[in-house]
Each structure stands twice: as structure tokens, then as C-alpha cells.
Length: 450
Ligand code: MSP
Image 1 (tube, rainbow, N blue to C red):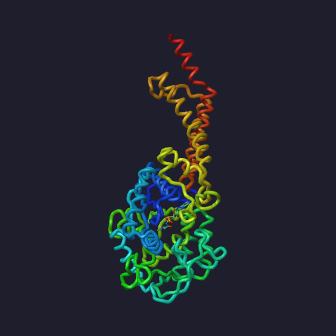
Image 2: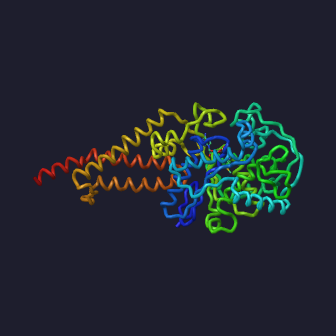
């Protein structure tokens, strides 16, 4: 059996592998990071409850200029800093009730080993060369930005001017795989969702094919994985980090890898579109590993119109919210209030009003009415269905049609619409109760018996 919908096609028997980005450890996690993890967790639980074998991976990205600079600025040993901050990300997981199956760190030996093995493969294939390069580097993004990506000379995400860097480095012949990648995107309409991001990637691929600088000289950066073919260089942090998606499955010989790759669904926000939709697939094409099934891209959580981020100085603490209101309420709000692919604003007022209107008044009220009636009139048990008339049949039809709509929504990365189905059904049941007043009926029957 296949469930084919407009956006995603997942065979009902496929194993399901889902990943978050691995987060930088130059600071503590904020609500934006918690959101991607919660979204992955909700989708994983859906597929798990539908009977699939699932694997959910998250973790931390610990090498690179940004991390080394942050440790220097805080006058702390870099290993000590990454250990402490990785722990913050790990500790958040039970607080937001994440059911991830593993947590990978790029400083893990198991990861470093795979990065070196894959670099050597690409090198042996002749897809890596040495050359001098000059470009504008954004340390926040950890990548060279083209002039067309800058707004008034600044990185649009980090609002900083990139540094001019000129040095000799190793390059990956990404350009060689440009056309194969375009073909893959054309042949697999669900590879990048939603559609507007697919168009953005195809736009990038219409530009002149580029190669990717994949090393940093140790004279400038020591905090990275040494290149297996030149010990004077460390690996560029994105080439290192993206490999977590296979090293986290213990590539290449493990049962886990064989079971879950390439049924991979990478969930990211739009800030890291290019590394995931251009660097990663071309790396895999060179190595000869099949491409993941899908990259699913969500928008930004905003505060006061700008992206919630440490570098812009505006964040919400997911621990504070989960502990104050409970993880369920925090998760509910995040899943409910972001439409897939769009940005969403976070305000305390919106948080409270969503929770009050939908969870307390609607669902909470329904639950307390039903539980109250069972407690009072039926020895705390749910009664068997009695007469089924027109109204009951209408309610049943509503529930069944909503079920189909909700399944389609969640399979297309729209948990907000899935939740809308639950709320819609609760509204209908509340209305049914208002009209049929079963508590009055129970009272009448009680009186008859007396
Ligand atoms: N280390 C890289 C990812 C490497 S993956 C191989 C990185 N790390 S990050 O710490 O900057 O995390 C970026 C991701 O965190 C986003 O893609 C998104 O998943 C999440 N978010 C961070 N801020 C966010 C918002 N304000 N809104 C929504 N998601 C946010 O990039």
C-alpha cells in the first residue's frame, strides 16, 4: 500500500529516518533549536505509531572557526567549552520530551573516522584539488558568501560584514555534479519541500557551477578534523558536519545504516538551505552514496520581526517555558503556530491565548465534560454506544473525513493543520453535547429508576 500525497510520498512499509541539523555549540540552545527538534520528534512519533521502524538523530556541530573564536573570546579551553555546551543541548532533550534515538557529536571518534574515510574516497576519485582562493567569509554562517547573497555588503542573517579571506586550500569539484543534482531534483519532485525552496535551489543551480573550499590551513585554524591526505590542514566545518547524517548510523557496515539509509528526511530551517541542498547531495554523488529521500525546510521563529538568534541578541529560553508551562503546552504552541515553510512570530500573549482558547477552553472543557459524565453516571467507565441516529452518524462521518485530512497534513509536514483537525473535531463534539445534553438524559433515567 502506498500513501501518495501532493508533497511527500512515503511507502507505508518504508523505514523512516529523520534528522535535525546538528547545532553549533558556541552558545546555549534557544527556542529556534528546540522547534526543529520538537517538529522532528512529532513527525517521528506519527510514523512510529503508524507501525514503521523509525530512527531519529540529533546532535552537536563542534568544530570550525566560529567555535574556536568563541572559546578564545570567552578565554576557555575549546574542548571544555564544547563539552559544556554540547551537554546543554543534550540536557534540553528530556525537558522538551524528545524521543531521539541517538545524539551525535562531531568530536566523537566514530564521526571523525567516517569523515576521514569519506574525504579519502573523494580525494582518491580525483574530486579534490589544491588552489588559491579569495572570497568573503561569514563566520556566523561558516561559509563564503557570494556578492548576490549580501544585503548592503552584510550577511542578511548575521547582520555583519564578511571577512575577506585569501589563502591556498583544497577544493571539492562540486561543479562536476551540478547537472546530476539538477536532474535529481527534477526527477524527484519531493526531494526539496516546500516548493518555494526547491525553486530557490534550482535558482542557485542556474548560476555558474561552483567548487567548494573544503579545508582550512592549521596556521589559522587548529580546531577541526585533520585532512587524511595533508596534515597541515583541517576539514572545513560543513564538509565535516554534514557527514553526521551517515556517521550517526555507523556507516558503512552497521545494520542500522543498511536499514535506514537512504530513507532519510533532513529537517532544517531556511538558513542552511545551500549546504543541505547543494553541498551535501553533491558530496554524496561523488562518494557514491544514494541521496537522502528528502530535505524539509521550515521558516524562522521571529521576535519583533527579526530572526530569533543569539547573534541578533533575541531569544526565548525553551527550558524556562517547558518548566513553567509543561513540555506539552510548549510543544503544542510551537507545532500549532508555525505554518510549514513560513516564518512565525513568537509573543508571550499569543502563547497564552492559544493555550487558553484551544487547550483549556476547547479540549480541556470537552475532556472534563466527558470524564465527569462517566464518573457520575457510569462508574467511571466509558459506556457502550447505544442508539446511533442521524446526529451520531454525522459526527462519525466528520471524524472519519477529518482523519484522512489530518493524515495527509502530517505526511506533508503540516502539524498545524493536523492539530486543527483535532480542534475541529473537539468543537463538533462539544456542539453535539450542547445539543443532545446527555447529562439531562442521565438525570431523567436516574429519576425513572428511583
Ligand atoms: N551547525 C549548523 C548545522 C549543521 S547540520 C549538518 C547550524 N547550526 S545552528 O546551531 O546555527 O542551527 C541552525 C538550525 O537551528 C536552523 O536550521 C533551525 O533548524 C534551528 N534554528 C535556529 N534558529 C531558529 C529560528 N529562529 N527559527 C527556526 N529555526 C531556528 O546551522
